[in-house]
Image 1 (cartoon, one colour):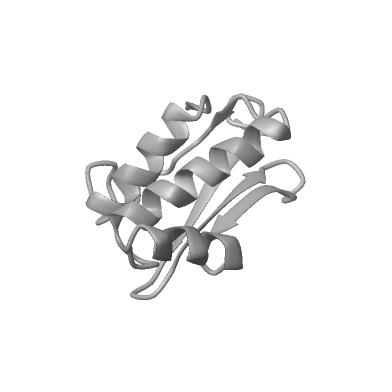
Image 2 (cartoon, rainbow, N blue to C red):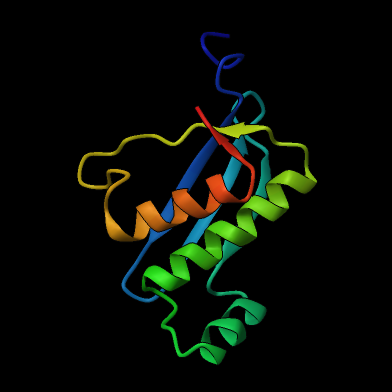
Length: 109
């Protein structure tokens, strides 16, 4: 079982030149608990309304906000955010997404 009981939920990010996507995964079962992406039609419309791209900092913050809402709806108290070399918290897109998750009430482990 290892450390699954300490960090039961894991954040998986997908960053490309065109889109930003994120998932919260339950580590023990591998089940996706919450998912948000700029590929969603509603997200594209919301970003277009404010004149933002689907892959910039504003898009990352929007995805973080959506993910926080969906994770909270599924009773996710905290998420483990792995520190990947080159994708630290301070990076523009990752940092905005993580900050939006935190602001949405999802803790970080």
